[in-house]
Image 1 (cartoon, helix red, strand yellow):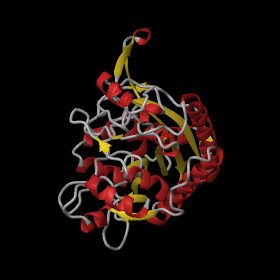
Image 2: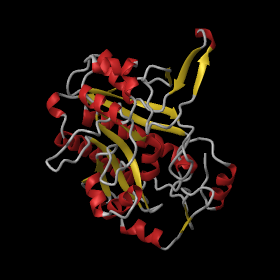
Image 3: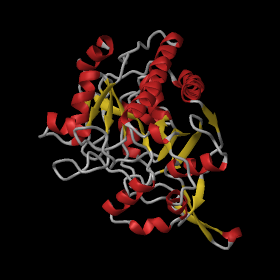
Length: 364
């Protein structure tokens, strides 16, 4: 970590008023050219998904790009993002939506395929999020490994959640070592273990900082962190970050101190941009009781009449744990890129393209 971090410390990050999240390292030079980058992306994705499926006992399945509107299957994420929707002429103008995530769809597939406890699925999820703020790590186009696994009633606890996080993190560390083996100029920087901390503890540690500033401080300190309990209100009356009420369980008490939530985010310190980089959002999913509670907390009890919610409340869906792991972000981290647009092809503002090009950042 010292080698990369010391290099960054000699440079300043250029910021832009129009794109506040666009961070441009001065004197930036990509470690791999475009052809080698494309080949590296392929190798990383193949290696990571093979190891992930082995660690978590997952079977690959095909994923939808569109789902029917009005079924509750598509995800509202923070509850404010609007999905891309259109009507299908050949189906009497049936209204459909491009997926934003597959959290609920995966749980329904677990039931359809009759997976048993300890077994699950993963898929290549491609989505569009038109409300996203475009910057160095956010794009309109989202690509991630979405995974979901059946669990037992006795697995709905913090100990089990941590064990799954550690399995995923070990896969991330192993993949970084593999990348370093392929490309000797890329040195491993991740710590061997991941640090766990509750959002309530973060608030107590850094009461005067914003949630993102807290994440930065704790992630820079430990290198890799899993922040537990995202969605429920903290002492200040606001959640650490928003979460939809109908997939992760963020309201259940998880320890003797009364901390809430059986979900969280995997964050790593990324010295190229001097940020806490979120690689994965995941959690133990709602059961009928926590779904009812969270729908009431969020003031959207009417959702209980939607297809997905009816199935869950009627006991037709298995208990599960699941999440998403960003493919482009993971590749960006492993290859030490300055912008996610160096990994994936998307649409970027022309002014952003020009600024990046001046600094040797070539957006696809």
